Length: 191
Length: 193
Image (cartoon, rainbow over all chains, first blue to last red; front, side, top):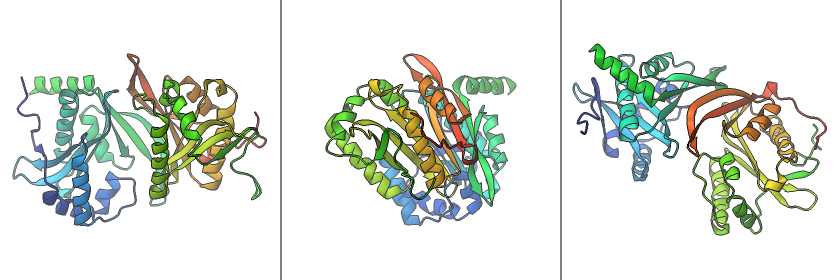
């Protein structure tokens, strides 16, 4: 039987949005360098609304597009995005990236809920075996959130990043399908 | 090393540009060998015709022009200009001084001759002393024993192990990320064949 709630979690749902709708908020989030420095190793840079729109339009044309916007269930607020990239079908492995724009939604379970939905999609719809991500050493909030969904540290790229005069590691984390399934069953039993 | 040092020459080998006339046919032959392809990429092995290879070379040069974050070398024998392999420094993040490294020897007959070690010495010197990178990464499958041995010989250490990220011939393998920091690099003075 199909799961009617594939894109709906406890706090958020994953949606597809037109570039016009999201270009403006994405552009605003991009001006927040704290946001950029959790999301990307490139030096923070501000993109125009037009540039965001063009980028999203191009991304939509790709056949292997797995880009979702994150909206709250309460009030349907657009708060972030989550996407799969570098997907290797033949190995059953993919990378994932997630970001929440407005600070008031950070550290309150919204990201964890969205990531859980993305993993459910990756493991039960795309039938992938594992999902990988890179988190920067200084993003402890991110690391704790990923651990809740079954991600474990698989290693550290030593000093891969130089920021504020300090060297930081890239931390690779991986979630295996069987670990994620076990967490789902445990939380089902608990509730 | 001095200003007079030839960065792209070792005892037997020379790193140089793509020859768009002669190389496509040779590398096309190499792409029929999955060992060659699996060492370079985690995509499914797929042979390329000389015409497809030609297109690939154009794409490589375009990408280098536009992104300014990779270097691509063809490896040739100094003695007879014969094409032996290829080598890349790629995914450079200039602001962090980090980059990736890749190399492959094409023909089975040219493997186990110490060519890869010679190329590695040139690549490391280029990456650390010319590009002034802080660190280099290489990603290899657990099944690529020759690749792992070569990297470890030059001081690369295992940093990341992505569990069962590779599925080949019905078997799971870990993907291993290795890294070498500039201050761990031991330059080899006289190149040993």
